[in-house]
Length: 301
Image (cartoon, rainbow, N blue to C red; front, side, top):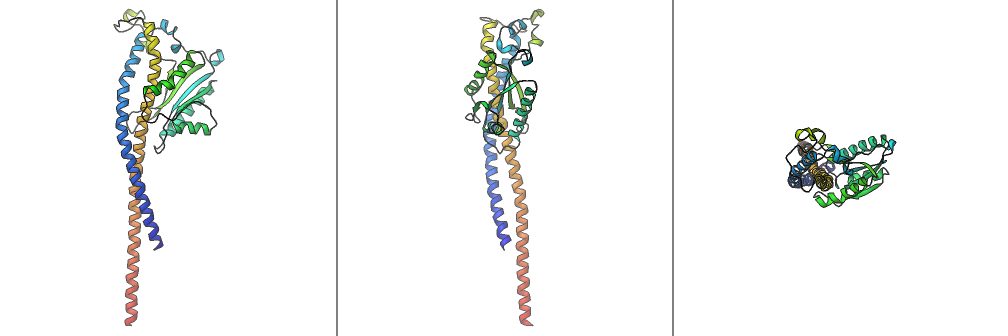
């Protein structure tokens, strides 16, 4: 019966594991709804902000704002440093969610280094920070306190040093590595260029009469210059905030999927273990009955 006791122990262990994964699945499902609501609330504002910038920015204005300028490559005297902001989660058990983001970051870093840039890493999330620390990379910014409820203040704290460095001419570009929340089952990694700010002025800048003015009937007060001076940093901060909320929602979606798969797999393993245990127990009972019958026959004979 030693093997039978081992099977019963494995059955209890798998049952306990299934309870944990089921609970984590339910928790992630609950958090996913709230995180998805934040994503849905953030998207219209970000889209409207981009649309307004696309209408306001003209080639003449772009030359007067540092956040719109495209620096020259290092070979032509431009800045040698390029920033990469990696957003991951603080916890695991989310399938390939974090590893996909890390792969995307590595791909982008290798591409920038191939162009001659020195990489400055900024990160939010223990998983990404821990991985690149293991590789010997230094971090200019480490944030592990944001969690799955990012705020506009968190985004500003990440974005403002990057904005200041870019305006000062110390950075050539800033790339944001985030998860793109499409559905709970589709959360692919994405690279978003947040600096320099790019708009659709090339397509909409012809404006009324093709003179390079706004394409909509805006009444600008005090002026396009003053408005852009406020909107451009706001757009960068909002891009970081949108990346944070989409990555948080994608994390919960990936964890819910992973925990559901783990729960289903635990159920299948339980079925196999229970069948094995019942067959062994039935074989043991049959053998005991055979021994009793054989013993009784021997006494009668």
